[in-house]
Image 1 (cartoon, one colour):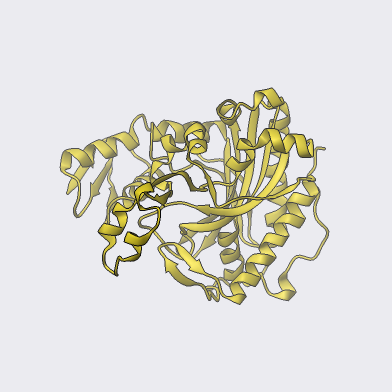
Image 2 (cartoon, rainbow, N blue to C red):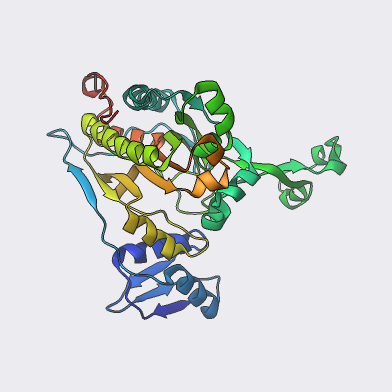
Length: 370
Protein backbone atom coordinates (compact mmCIF):
# COMPACT_ATOMS: atom_id res chain seq x y z
CA UNK A 1 0.00 0.00 0.00
CA UNK A 2 1.31 3.45 -0.95
CA UNK A 3 0.45 6.97 0.12
CA UNK A 4 1.96 10.20 -1.20
CA UNK A 5 2.04 13.21 1.13
CA UNK A 6 2.59 16.30 -0.98
CA UNK A 7 3.71 18.84 1.57
CA UNK A 8 7.33 19.78 2.40
CA UNK A 9 9.07 17.35 4.79
CA UNK A 10 12.74 17.41 5.76
CA UNK A 11 14.97 14.33 5.85
CA UNK A 12 14.99 14.10 9.65
CA UNK A 13 11.23 14.09 9.93
CA UNK A 14 10.93 11.56 7.10
CA UNK A 15 13.23 9.25 9.04
CA UNK A 16 11.18 9.75 12.23
CA UNK A 17 8.04 8.87 10.26
CA UNK A 18 9.67 5.69 8.97
CA UNK A 19 10.63 4.66 12.52
CA UNK A 20 7.15 5.45 13.83
CA UNK A 21 5.42 3.30 11.22
CA UNK A 22 8.08 0.61 11.69
CA UNK A 23 6.79 -0.01 15.19
CA UNK A 24 3.60 -1.40 13.67
CA UNK A 25 4.45 -2.72 10.19
CA UNK A 26 7.29 -4.62 8.53
CA UNK A 27 9.08 -3.38 5.42
CA UNK A 28 8.11 0.28 5.69
CA UNK A 29 9.82 2.66 3.25
CA UNK A 30 9.61 6.46 3.26
CA UNK A 31 10.99 8.08 0.12
CA UNK A 32 11.79 11.78 0.28
CA UNK A 33 10.42 13.56 -2.81
CA UNK A 34 11.04 17.05 -4.19
CA UNK A 35 7.83 17.99 -2.41
CA UNK A 36 6.69 15.66 0.33
CA UNK A 37 7.20 11.93 0.85
CA UNK A 38 5.93 8.66 -0.56
CA UNK A 39 5.20 6.03 2.09
CA UNK A 40 4.96 2.33 1.25
CA UNK A 41 3.77 -0.46 3.57
CA UNK A 42 3.71 -4.01 2.12
CA UNK A 43 0.65 -5.12 4.08
CA UNK A 44 -1.66 -3.97 6.83
CA UNK A 45 -3.51 -0.65 6.55
CA UNK A 46 -5.78 0.50 3.76
CA UNK A 47 -4.74 3.57 1.78
CA UNK A 48 -7.10 5.88 3.75
CA UNK A 49 -5.81 4.45 7.06
CA UNK A 50 -2.19 4.88 6.00
CA UNK A 51 -2.89 8.42 4.85
CA UNK A 52 -4.50 9.32 8.17
CA UNK A 53 -1.52 7.94 10.12
CA UNK A 54 0.95 9.91 8.01
CA UNK A 55 -1.06 13.13 8.22
CA UNK A 56 -1.46 12.74 11.99
CA UNK A 57 2.28 12.32 12.46
CA UNK A 58 3.16 15.26 10.19
CA UNK A 59 0.29 17.57 11.19
CA UNK A 60 1.49 21.13 11.64
CA UNK A 61 5.04 20.19 10.69
CA UNK A 62 7.75 22.73 10.06
CA UNK A 63 11.50 22.33 9.98
CA UNK A 64 13.38 23.44 13.11
CA UNK A 65 17.14 23.72 12.96
CA UNK A 66 19.15 21.76 15.53
CA UNK A 67 21.69 23.44 17.81
CA UNK A 68 25.10 21.78 18.19
CA UNK A 69 26.62 22.37 21.62
CA UNK A 70 29.92 20.61 21.02
CA UNK A 71 31.66 18.19 18.65
CA UNK A 72 34.51 16.02 19.89
CA UNK A 73 36.76 13.92 17.65
CA UNK A 74 37.78 11.57 20.47
CA UNK A 75 41.24 10.34 21.36
CA UNK A 76 43.68 10.37 18.40
CA UNK A 77 44.11 7.11 16.53
CA UNK A 78 40.84 5.50 17.52
CA UNK A 79 39.66 2.65 15.28
CA UNK A 80 35.95 1.82 15.18
CA UNK A 81 35.11 -1.89 15.06
CA UNK A 82 32.28 -4.14 16.13
CA UNK A 83 32.78 -4.78 19.84
CA UNK A 84 33.32 -8.20 21.39
CA UNK A 85 29.74 -8.88 22.42
CA UNK A 86 29.07 -12.05 24.44
CA UNK A 87 25.39 -11.26 25.05
CA UNK A 88 22.88 -14.00 24.25
CA UNK A 89 19.42 -13.02 23.00
CA UNK A 90 16.70 -14.47 25.27
CA UNK A 91 13.73 -12.48 23.93
CA UNK A 92 13.12 -9.64 21.51
CA UNK A 93 15.44 -6.86 22.65
CA UNK A 94 16.52 -8.69 25.84
CA UNK A 95 19.86 -10.37 26.50
CA UNK A 96 21.67 -12.70 28.88
CA UNK A 97 24.97 -10.98 29.69
CA UNK A 98 28.21 -12.93 29.82
CA UNK A 99 31.05 -12.12 32.23
CA UNK A 100 32.92 -9.82 29.82
CA UNK A 101 29.87 -7.70 29.05
CA UNK A 102 28.86 -7.66 32.72
CA UNK A 103 32.30 -6.40 33.71
CA UNK A 104 32.18 -3.69 31.06
CA UNK A 105 28.72 -2.58 32.19
CA UNK A 106 29.82 -2.50 35.83
CA UNK A 107 32.76 -0.30 34.87
CA UNK A 108 30.57 2.15 32.97
CA UNK A 109 28.04 2.26 35.82
CA UNK A 110 30.86 2.99 38.26
CA UNK A 111 32.14 5.83 36.04
CA UNK A 112 28.69 7.42 36.02
CA UNK A 113 28.47 7.27 39.78
CA UNK A 114 31.97 8.59 40.38
CA UNK A 115 31.98 11.32 37.70
CA UNK A 116 28.37 12.47 37.98
CA UNK A 117 26.45 11.37 41.09
CA UNK A 118 29.27 12.03 43.56
CA UNK A 119 30.34 15.49 42.26
CA UNK A 120 26.69 16.59 42.37
CA UNK A 121 26.33 15.20 45.91
CA UNK A 122 23.26 13.26 44.77
CA UNK A 123 21.96 10.36 46.89
CA UNK A 124 22.08 7.21 44.75
CA UNK A 125 18.79 5.33 44.38
CA UNK A 126 18.11 1.94 42.80
CA UNK A 127 14.96 1.93 40.67
CA UNK A 128 12.49 -0.95 40.63
CA UNK A 129 11.55 -2.92 37.53
CA UNK A 130 7.82 -2.26 38.08
CA UNK A 131 5.85 0.91 38.63
CA UNK A 132 2.17 1.68 39.13
CA UNK A 133 0.24 2.01 35.88
CA UNK A 134 -1.40 5.15 37.32
CA UNK A 135 2.01 6.85 37.48
CA UNK A 136 2.32 6.60 33.69
CA UNK A 137 -1.21 7.95 33.25
CA UNK A 138 -0.49 10.98 35.44
CA UNK A 139 2.86 11.57 33.77
CA UNK A 140 1.21 11.65 30.33
CA UNK A 141 3.22 8.68 29.10
CA UNK A 142 0.16 7.05 27.55
CA UNK A 143 -0.51 10.26 25.61
CA UNK A 144 2.95 10.45 24.08
CA UNK A 145 4.36 6.90 24.02
CA UNK A 146 1.44 4.43 24.14
CA UNK A 147 3.32 2.00 21.91
CA UNK A 148 6.20 1.61 24.37
CA UNK A 149 4.28 0.48 27.48
CA UNK A 150 4.84 -3.07 28.78
CA UNK A 151 1.86 -4.13 30.88
CA UNK A 152 2.27 -6.72 33.65
CA UNK A 153 -0.33 -9.51 33.75
CA UNK A 154 -1.63 -11.52 36.70
CA UNK A 155 -3.55 -14.79 36.74
CA UNK A 156 -7.30 -14.26 36.98
CA UNK A 157 -8.90 -14.71 40.40
CA UNK A 158 -10.93 -17.75 39.36
CA UNK A 159 -7.70 -19.62 38.58
CA UNK A 160 -6.12 -18.80 41.91
CA UNK A 161 -4.81 -22.34 42.49
CA UNK A 162 -3.09 -22.52 39.12
CA UNK A 163 -4.24 -26.10 38.54
CA UNK A 164 -5.91 -25.44 35.20
CA UNK A 165 -2.97 -23.38 34.01
CA UNK A 166 -0.56 -26.11 35.11
CA UNK A 167 -2.29 -28.56 32.80
CA UNK A 168 -1.47 -26.51 29.70
CA UNK A 169 1.01 -27.90 27.21
CA UNK A 170 3.34 -26.22 24.71
CA UNK A 171 1.70 -24.37 21.80
CA UNK A 172 -1.42 -23.57 23.83
CA UNK A 173 -0.63 -19.89 24.00
CA UNK A 174 -4.18 -18.80 23.16
CA UNK A 175 -5.56 -20.74 26.10
CA UNK A 176 -2.78 -19.45 28.32
CA UNK A 177 -3.64 -15.85 27.44
CA UNK A 178 -7.22 -16.40 28.58
CA UNK A 179 -6.12 -17.12 32.15
CA UNK A 180 -4.46 -13.73 32.65
CA UNK A 181 -5.68 -10.17 33.16
CA UNK A 182 -3.70 -6.87 33.23
CA UNK A 183 -2.32 -5.97 36.63
CA UNK A 184 -2.15 -2.49 38.16
CA UNK A 185 1.58 -2.31 37.46
CA UNK A 186 3.66 -1.92 34.31
CA UNK A 187 7.35 -2.37 33.63
CA UNK A 188 9.25 0.84 34.31
CA UNK A 189 9.82 2.82 31.07
CA UNK A 190 11.97 5.57 32.61
CA UNK A 191 13.66 5.70 36.01
CA UNK A 192 12.97 9.35 36.93
CA UNK A 193 9.26 8.58 37.46
CA UNK A 194 10.21 6.72 40.64
CA UNK A 195 11.68 9.96 41.99
CA UNK A 196 8.64 12.11 41.15
CA UNK A 197 6.18 9.56 42.54
CA UNK A 198 8.07 9.30 45.84
CA UNK A 199 9.35 12.89 46.04
CA UNK A 200 7.77 13.70 49.41
CA UNK A 201 9.32 10.68 51.16
CA UNK A 202 12.69 11.23 49.47
CA UNK A 203 12.74 14.91 50.43
CA UNK A 204 11.86 14.03 54.03
CA UNK A 205 14.66 11.45 54.25
CA UNK A 206 17.45 13.23 52.41
CA UNK A 207 16.53 16.93 52.47
CA UNK A 208 17.35 17.51 48.81
CA UNK A 209 15.66 17.76 45.44
CA UNK A 210 18.59 16.30 43.49
CA UNK A 211 19.00 12.52 43.12
CA UNK A 212 20.85 9.94 41.07
CA UNK A 213 19.01 6.77 40.15
CA UNK A 214 20.11 3.61 38.37
CA UNK A 215 17.70 0.89 37.33
CA UNK A 216 16.18 -1.39 34.70
CA UNK A 217 14.03 0.13 31.95
CA UNK A 218 11.62 -1.64 29.59
CA UNK A 219 10.11 -0.34 26.37
CA UNK A 220 7.96 -2.44 24.07
CA UNK A 221 9.28 -2.28 20.54
CA UNK A 222 7.71 -4.98 18.42
CA UNK A 223 10.31 -4.40 15.72
CA UNK A 224 13.54 -2.45 15.19
CA UNK A 225 15.52 -4.57 17.65
CA UNK A 226 19.31 -4.62 17.26
CA UNK A 227 22.45 -4.75 19.39
CA UNK A 228 21.70 -1.18 20.53
CA UNK A 229 17.89 -0.99 20.11
CA UNK A 230 16.80 -2.83 23.22
CA UNK A 231 13.49 -3.66 24.84
CA UNK A 232 15.22 -4.05 28.22
CA UNK A 233 18.21 -2.01 29.35
CA UNK A 234 19.66 -0.10 32.30
CA UNK A 235 19.54 3.64 32.76
CA UNK A 236 21.48 6.05 34.97
CA UNK A 237 19.86 9.42 35.66
CA UNK A 238 20.41 12.63 37.55
CA UNK A 239 16.99 14.02 38.52
CA UNK A 240 16.29 17.53 39.82
CA UNK A 241 13.08 18.99 41.22
CA UNK A 242 12.88 22.47 42.69
CA UNK A 243 11.98 26.06 41.92
CA UNK A 244 12.09 27.17 38.28
CA UNK A 245 15.32 29.04 38.98
CA UNK A 246 16.97 26.10 40.74
CA UNK A 247 16.01 23.68 37.97
CA UNK A 248 17.18 26.04 35.21
CA UNK A 249 20.49 26.43 37.04
CA UNK A 250 21.00 22.68 37.47
CA UNK A 251 19.91 21.95 33.89
CA UNK A 252 22.91 24.03 32.77
CA UNK A 253 25.15 22.31 35.34
CA UNK A 254 24.07 18.90 34.07
CA UNK A 255 24.73 19.91 30.47
CA UNK A 256 28.22 21.15 31.40
CA UNK A 257 28.91 18.04 33.47
CA UNK A 258 27.87 15.74 30.63
CA UNK A 259 30.00 17.75 28.20
CA UNK A 260 33.05 17.31 30.45
CA UNK A 261 32.27 13.64 31.17
CA UNK A 262 32.06 12.56 27.53
CA UNK A 263 35.13 14.60 26.58
CA UNK A 264 37.00 12.81 29.38
CA UNK A 265 35.87 9.41 28.07
CA UNK A 266 37.56 10.22 24.77
CA UNK A 267 34.84 8.76 22.57
CA UNK A 268 33.93 10.66 19.37
CA UNK A 269 30.60 12.41 19.86
CA UNK A 270 28.56 15.51 19.43
CA UNK A 271 25.97 17.10 21.72
CA UNK A 272 22.99 18.46 19.82
CA UNK A 273 19.46 19.70 20.49
CA UNK A 274 16.96 16.93 19.85
CA UNK A 275 13.39 15.74 20.27
CA UNK A 276 11.71 12.53 21.36
CA UNK A 277 10.02 10.28 18.83
CA UNK A 278 6.46 11.03 19.93
CA UNK A 279 3.74 8.74 18.58
CA UNK A 280 0.65 9.76 20.51
CA UNK A 281 -1.22 13.05 20.75
CA UNK A 282 0.04 15.88 18.46
CA UNK A 283 3.52 14.34 17.97
CA UNK A 284 4.91 16.92 15.57
CA UNK A 285 3.92 19.96 17.60
CA UNK A 286 5.44 18.43 20.73
CA UNK A 287 8.64 17.63 18.84
CA UNK A 288 8.91 21.19 17.55
CA UNK A 289 8.34 22.62 21.03
CA UNK A 290 11.33 20.62 22.32
CA UNK A 291 13.56 21.81 19.50
CA UNK A 292 12.47 25.45 19.68
CA UNK A 293 12.82 25.60 23.47
CA UNK A 294 16.15 23.69 23.41
CA UNK A 295 14.77 21.62 26.28
CA UNK A 296 16.42 18.36 25.18
CA UNK A 297 20.03 17.70 24.19
CA UNK A 298 21.41 14.34 23.10
CA UNK A 299 24.93 12.92 23.17
CA UNK A 300 25.41 11.07 19.88
CA UNK A 301 28.30 8.75 19.03
CA UNK A 302 29.08 7.90 15.37
CA UNK A 303 28.96 4.18 14.60
CA UNK A 304 29.01 2.19 11.37
CA UNK A 305 25.24 2.42 10.81
CA UNK A 306 24.83 6.07 11.86
CA UNK A 307 24.79 8.00 15.11
CA UNK A 308 23.89 6.29 18.37
CA UNK A 309 22.22 8.40 21.05
CA UNK A 310 23.80 7.34 24.37
CA UNK A 311 22.63 10.10 26.71
CA UNK A 312 20.33 13.11 26.99
CA UNK A 313 19.71 16.16 29.18
CA UNK A 314 16.05 17.17 29.47
CA UNK A 315 14.15 20.16 30.88
CA UNK A 316 10.48 19.37 31.61
CA UNK A 317 9.18 22.72 32.81
CA UNK A 318 6.11 22.44 35.07
CA UNK A 319 4.67 19.24 33.56
CA UNK A 320 5.74 16.77 36.26
CA UNK A 321 5.45 19.31 39.07
CA UNK A 322 1.75 19.54 38.27
CA UNK A 323 1.25 15.86 37.45
CA UNK A 324 2.78 14.64 40.72
CA UNK A 325 1.70 17.47 43.04
CA UNK A 326 5.26 18.63 43.72
CA UNK A 327 4.49 22.30 44.33
CA UNK A 328 3.77 21.59 47.99
CA UNK A 329 7.43 20.58 48.28
CA UNK A 330 8.55 23.87 46.75
CA UNK A 331 9.14 22.20 43.38
CA UNK A 332 7.69 24.11 40.43
CA UNK A 333 9.78 22.42 37.72
CA UNK A 334 11.94 19.36 36.99
CA UNK A 335 14.80 18.28 34.77
CA UNK A 336 16.86 15.13 34.32
CA UNK A 337 20.00 13.88 32.60
CA UNK A 338 20.11 10.21 31.59
CA UNK A 339 22.63 7.75 30.21
CA UNK A 340 21.74 4.44 28.57
CA UNK A 341 24.35 2.22 30.20
CA UNK A 342 24.06 -0.58 27.61
CA UNK A 343 24.43 1.85 24.71
CA UNK A 344 27.36 3.70 26.24
CA UNK A 345 29.08 0.39 26.97
CA UNK A 346 28.57 -0.69 23.34
CA UNK A 347 29.94 2.65 22.06
CA UNK A 348 33.05 2.56 24.28
CA UNK A 349 33.75 -1.06 23.36
CA UNK A 350 33.36 -0.15 19.68
CA UNK A 351 36.26 2.28 20.00
CA UNK A 352 38.39 0.12 22.29
CA UNK A 353 37.98 2.50 25.21
CA UNK A 354 37.29 -0.03 27.93
CA UNK A 355 40.72 -1.65 28.00
CA UNK A 356 42.70 -1.11 31.19
CA UNK A 357 45.11 1.32 29.57
CA UNK A 358 42.27 3.44 28.16
CA UNK A 359 40.06 3.79 31.22
CA UNK A 360 39.90 7.32 32.64
CA UNK A 361 41.75 7.48 35.94
CA UNK A 362 41.80 11.20 36.72
CA UNK A 363 39.83 12.89 39.46
CA UNK A 364 36.14 13.57 39.05
CA UNK A 365 35.38 16.92 37.42
CA UNK A 366 33.04 18.84 39.73
CA UNK A 367 30.20 20.67 37.98
CA UNK A 368 30.57 24.42 37.96
CA UNK A 369 28.07 26.94 39.23
CA UNK A 370 27.47 25.85 42.83
